Length: 393
Image (tube, rainbow, N blue to C red; front, side):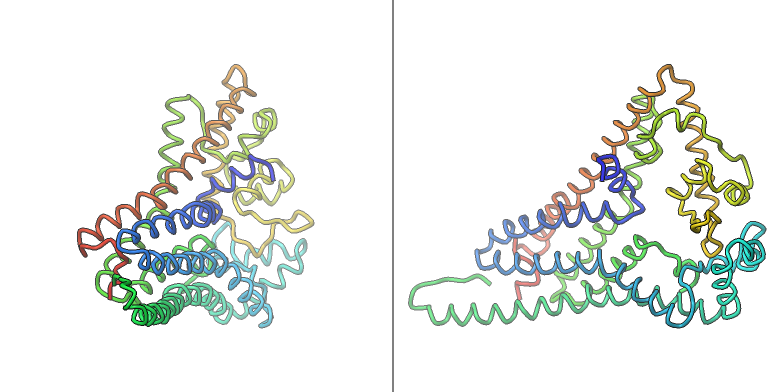
């Protein structure tokens, strides 16, 4: 994978890649170190117990959070196929419009996409059952990770701590003579992206962690910390990206609203690209091999079959495509207006890459350093102790 592709992936705030970088690469190791140092102010034993709990909690949660939903999606898709349906049929197509819908797509693609139309016909004839299967997929793919992360994992973690503390206290008692001391569902739900499902599971995780907390101080801290983590993971990066891109346009006089992979393309490829003015779906159907249609396939989730017929089972988000077209049109106009299109494109790529790295850096700093430090300050103010509230008894 090229550097531009990597930057593109971590810069896409609608995907899970920025979360993987922030969570597993930066946030978790930093939190573990901060937890150890903070609880060391109480005692070495407290630091040991708190750090062990943090490692199990953070890495266990990350594994379930990042991998649980994709795994459950695959299992549920397998189950839907066992019932004789194709999970690729998008339930949004039940909403018939002038541009797309199950009935319209069946009629339109019955000659060019026979197998896909068969999938549509079965979904149409069994609408209620298929919608229930898709709703069940959403429930299972979010409820199971929520149960594991929010309720089962913390309970097991706390039980482990209890057993270890019992052994520690027993050892302490045996060594008293040595003067040792110790301180105490609908279509909108069915069509949710993996990222949106992760946001839902994060909300469930927050409820679970607050519910299973061992005392009221731990409940208060969990509620504050988890709520702020949701904001910094799912809301803040998108707004920060818009702010950085807007500032860049004003400061450097360059449009950086497109994906880095697009900005990295040869300026001649984009400068003369054909852009449809209206009837987006009709254009995609009649011109599947044009540069714009291929870009929509890559950046706007438009799906084509092997014979380059648009997949009638997939829903086309025309609003997303129109927004993409407008940004592309604005960028190509600026390319044409520039004295040196190649230099303009290179500058745009450099600035966009810098913005993405800055976004990851700022949001990771807030998650991995600023939020834990603020939590520790509030903990000290509320409980009067540096130790983890749940370990104070």
